[in-house]
Amino acid sequence: KDFKPLSKEEQNTIKEAQKALDAIESIPCTACRYCTPGCPMGIEIPDIFKAMNWYKIYGMKDKAKDRYESTVQKSAKASECIECGQCEGVCPQQLPIIKYLKECADVLEE
Ligand code: SF4
Ligand code: SF4
Image (cartoon, rainbow, N blue to C red; front, side, top):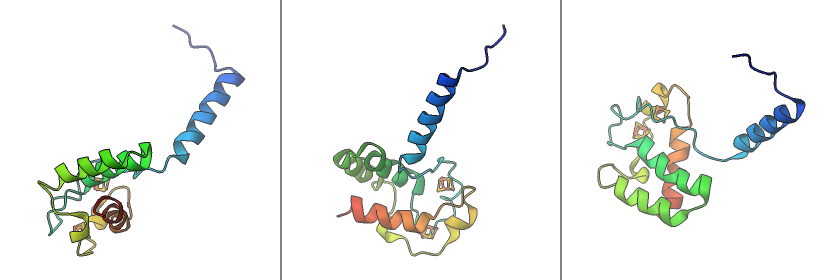
């Protein structure tokens, strides 16, 4: 089946949608989990980031805190990071993990 080229209007809609997505302030962790086995503190980094994104994307602080509470049943807390840098060294996205964890601790452990 042939595909029609996108109309100007459709292209604009896509551009707008992409702009909106770019503006969302989420932690762009893909949950590849490369960072977790090497963490000496046993921090389940992607699970903590996932909890935080409930707040960052949807503004749902209570839900984010609930998620965080259940995550730290099996993970050390974000505030227990000793800043060894091991996780950032292996993150394929080169995320500023330590900075994000501090933010998570501030919002979710207050
Ligand atoms: S910097 Fe923090 S989160 Fe990263 S590996 Fe070290 S202790 Fe774990
Ligand atoms: S290595 Fe980076 S992208 Fe992968 S789970 Fe850890 S923080 Fe997320």
